[in-house]
Length: 127
Image 1: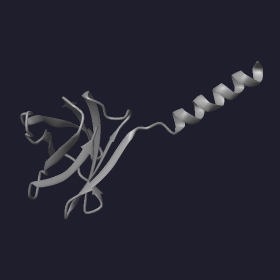
Image 2: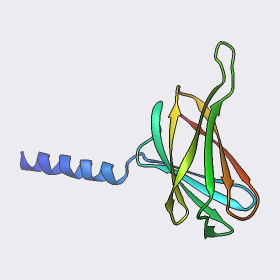
Image 3: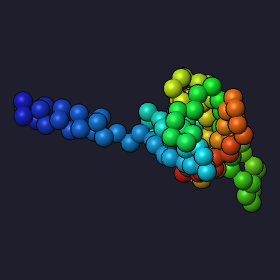
């Protein structure tokens, strides 16, 4: 019985170390964003962390807006979730997104640095 308990503990420890958290990178010409979440993304509310770098350096004090949308399809209207991300410092931002259904969502991340031009980074995710 002790061996069974030890085996279950080992399996649980291994799965927690190798959990199915979400992570994806997207780039524009000058800006790179790493999207991540502590849990896999699901239909409904999700919290994502965005780590931004520009020319290899952390991008601080920028205005970051995340727009997730699904185009209209036959029998289904256009859907959108657009939020301002809050800065956590050191080029890290946090945003709360809501995905109203499963499928492929387009993400547009608009980054407006204190100095320089506004950048749009495009990617997509599947739920």
